[in-house]
Length: 200
Length: 370
Image (cartoon, rainbow over all chains, first blue to last red; front, side, top):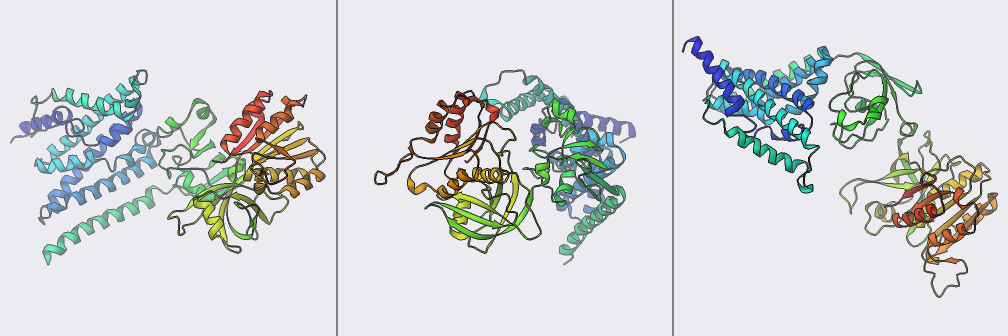
């Protein structure tokens, strides 16, 4: 493959990860923070940015660890443990750095980092990368795309929920009930992208 | 063998490496040096290593801020006023603050990190909450289901409480309970007695804490308590007082009466004490002594169901009805302050009676036993 078609392929993966194969709405990963932190657009944006950043970096680190540690020793089955350890350590480290050197960034983004250490979308993205046998460039664009897709979904959800504050919702559906229904409708809408792009 | 050990060695090696890197990073990056925390305009001040949350730091300093979620920012109880040094309000705190609190600089202490010197304000009552490992000195039977427990405060410690406040008693794990539970009991003893506090406890059938106190706690054994808590105490005014209590609800009122006698408080006061039968009646002699020791105090025991066999010459009926009858004959009924302590039902109906005579809600103080 020449560089041009390689870049095009990475771009396709990026957009596929955002729209057609949205990690949240098509794969239902990262649901818990999606449901609990989607009350305000402002916080959703902060959390979304944190996810984009963490996903992009950890997927690269995980790719390197997979390629240069797990594969040479043929212990790929340890990827679950290793990926989780790397994600946790990376999040801790990034939080420390941000907190120390950029209070503004920490205030807007850093405080969400502990919340997403255990976000299954992050681990999920790394595992998809293995299954789909991406190279490093593809993996990074997949990580960034998945993060961006997740962010788009949660910001959209937060926007809807902010408007729901003024809506009359039946008592039994208030809170998680209506949120899950909305998530379902959003997922249905995203099915409309099916077949447009395929990153696989 | 290699099949077995190499993967383990690799995974452990990577984990150890990452852990070492994190520890190193924490030393270098998260070193905030020493910070000074100043509480209530220098009433208390201490120096600690920065980096931890304010809530953790205060707990280390034995200042107990209420918190139910353990510092994850989900309960919103650990509010503290920070006057200086906390930085802007975080998005994790915003949902728990109303506009007033924002303006006043209220913060969730579990979300505030110690990065530089901090000036904070904590209500004096929280500052004085401590844990005490008391020794149960004596247990006195008042009635068949009410006992008084005298707890010695450990040597060198002092509990500064306002008469009427309560403490929390920790019932440890024992045969009938697999978990530790805290239950609140009002202090009933003379506040002049600094060595000990007394609690009056009514047995609750199958109650975890009362069963422990009644059946398992022996004189000489130790008991963990913390406190004091509560806003039920005598307000410093000179209007007449009406006390209404049922059963063990007499406890905080007894404490207040001691305090009034110590201070030679001349306020007019009347105390309606409701129980069911003569078997349930206790502390009558003590109350008689308050009647002679205080300038203007009357004690009226009221039995709801006196035994037909006993010749009861006192008041009969509901304690609230007795109070109502009394207030009817007072021309200044609306000026009274009400102090109520007892079951929720008794308190509800007492409030109805008192407000019916024009006593405003904010002049009625109560402790609900539930």
